[in-house]
Length: 283
Ligand SMILES: Nc1ncnc2c1ncn2[C@@H]1O[C@H](COP(=O)(O)OP(=O)(O)O)[C@@H](O)[C@H]1O
Ligand SMILES: [Mg+2]
Image 1: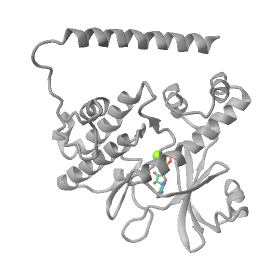
Image 2 (image 1 turned 180 degrees about the vertical axis):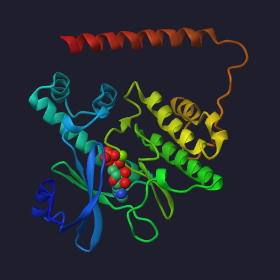
Image 3 (image 1 turned 90 degrees about the vertical axis):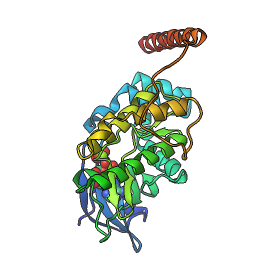
């Protein structure tokens, strides 16, 4: 096909030799099948910030590591420099997350380059070499649903052990190749250790999986894997081998008054922190 404008710089730089066809146009990006030398890859072209949707939310900005405080302040103030900075942080976030996750053994497409707002990565394919389908359109038996659910929980644990939470995990951001599920679409991935919304994001990701597979295996709707995984992570006990039950124990035995007081103090500190942040933003 004729090279789309946004891919021209990559062709000029020799990162792409030929654009084969458009694969998908989603809410955040358009994805093309491209040829790089003898290899078929895909190129994800990010939409401009003003064409994107909910990912602008503060929740997502917050967990993002920014190189220096001048950049952080500029981003908060929304100046032109700040918006450009935020745009670059956004575009690099996905390639950073992919590198981190691939190194941690998570099943993600291999990233190659991110250049001029375009991410070149491995094209995930099915057994016939065609672009792999999304989980949402794969026919599932109860056995397969259980196997994929377990495989995906394992991926979520591997990600969290690497300090990353997807933040938008669903049957639309999971592809299925001959070996099983592959996780994609990570520009909004958050840093588990530095975000105050980490636990709720993790729980939402895990609940999305249970809700999807729960249409085939209703017992999954009762599971509490999100809470269980987060509990282990917070306690410093989560490893890729941690056995999971999907249940969290109801509190039993005597109440630990000291622990309750510590929790209250922590909650107060958190509330004060939020107030300070609001005041900073307002000034
Ligand atoms: N590495 C890949 N291999 C195969 N297909 C992909 C790949 N990355 C994206 N796609 C396809 O493009 C679609 C959109 O990509 P995605 O990263 O989810 O962006 P968006 O933010 O637009 O949802 C996906 O649902 C999938 O069908
Ligand atoms: Mg997507």
